[in-house]
Length: 267
Ligand SMILES: Nc1ncnc2c1ncn2[C@@H]1O[C@H](COP(=O)(O)OP(=O)(O)OP(=O)(O)O)[C@@H](O)[C@H]1O
Ligand SMILES: [Mg+2]
Image (cartoon, rainbow, N blue to C red; front, side, top):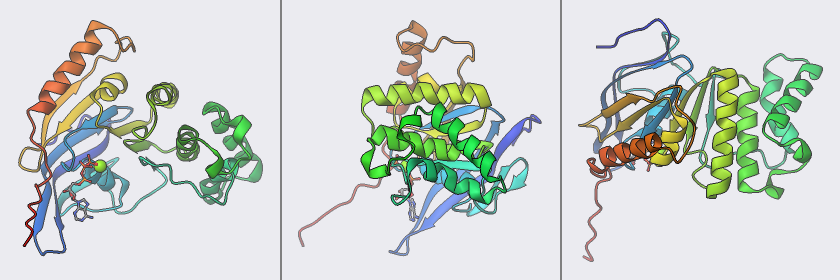
């Protein structure tokens, strides 16, 4: 039963997703998922590899569709991707032939903004992500952390209502990751987009989220769902933070791996 609070941004209603693979077998990945994500919520999704986290995100992005059930944005069924949902992947997917500035400007050309408005928006987001000095560089000359910043700036420039992030910082070193987490939180506290953030890191989820769900394999579904106090201190060393991490770790440890073991024979 889905309960609508009136501040709903995303709704999963009895969602099932089954993939049909090349061997003709059907693999159920999501089974009877019911989930309401409120406006302005920062939801982190944890779960073992292969349990369907990216699938969940792709359904909201409109890249794929449920086998049955409904996925809705603002109470309307999602039927295609749209600029109201910005997606950031694990690896920054920038246009290599465009400079940083032009990469960020690219999507704005389709929004009807005039040149002056576009320039202003690009400048604001370059500044926000600490990229002003790199505006005229090409992606291949940037570090991984800088490329990911450009990818985020490009998405934010379109002012999406929803940010969908799939392990966006997992390929970065620990220091860069923590810096970008703080930058993301700063942007979120200014604009309060609704965020769905997939991660494998309990530390990252405990630091960023104001709500955390843990997804298990299809037969289990969402088995942990809890709010993190909004007024907590954002510190990685408080007892509260450590006990939250431990709880997440324990919950995750109860879940088996979702990937079917491959059995190889030498016949
Ligand atoms: N297009 C597809 N066709 C067939 N099977 C797919 C497809 N996409 C995903 N799957 C399968 O669905 C399952 C869930 O995949 P998904 O990528 O959603 O998992 P995940 O939780 O994001 O995993 P990870 O943590 O490793 O990124 C996996 O077994 C995967 O092989
Ligand atoms: Mg994934």
